[in-house]
Figure 1 (cartoon, rainbow, N blue to C red):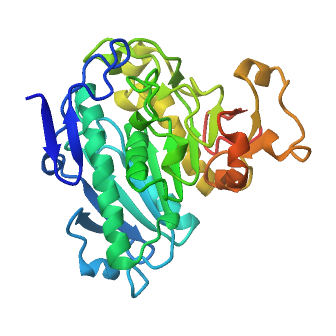
Figure 2 (cartoon, helix red, strand yellow):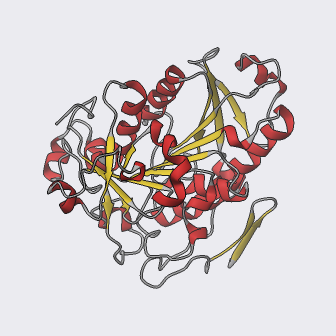
Length: 357
């Protein structure tokens, strides 16, 4: 089979975004039915059990999970999207992030589960993201039609491959989504492809902020084992209106890079992907720890930052500094000036990370 067509989603071929060095194998995505993307809604009224919903079947009882008689009302609506190999049983961070968001503000939170399509090989999961994104867009459109949701109130938070899913959803909605936060967006087989349609980019939402925690400079990858082959799982170059590089954006304090240490760990996967997942913890800390703000500084590279060459007075020029995490939105008004630039900061190895170190 050389191509597949899914009504309302798109037509896909083996040539889509193919590159002889950076994406040498392109697989056809699974059908929406097989991926079976699920949305679980939580609110302050229903913070624990949630309500399970599928695209195409948004129920009237949605209002039972909300405090507004018209459903989602005019409150912020958050979507949390996971990446490769994660699911609702193994990835406690999604529940923790949901709790942190609900504690921080009165909003509605959807956890997006596409775990029937995120298994190895990595190339298959990559292709499946191009179905999950449009399915998300259709789901959001359904909320718009039935409950008056305004896309300006939508904030999609994606980790790894979930960041690019957020980008595909935002693209389908013509960039009207209020905000997309990319938590260490996946780099392997995305970096090096110049077409912005293949990845998250600033045109996908009104404001796009990125936290890079395990970035690796672009290089060719070995097909089918690219996840194992890569030393860094994140995207190295800038992707949003505002890009943060804590500790240089490659390796994070407290994360071991030794495979032997990982194998001896009680939680092997967590240790192996510690740097990659640290972006999630930084974002959660920005919600739960407001005492010290994670202020970052505009700089060309991390070496100059560590030498103190870029730690200018934030009051002299507002774009010299930005706050990483939930408060990054404060810089949205300067997005045309911050886009394409890199912001660096130092963190600690343990929560709350943003104590003076």
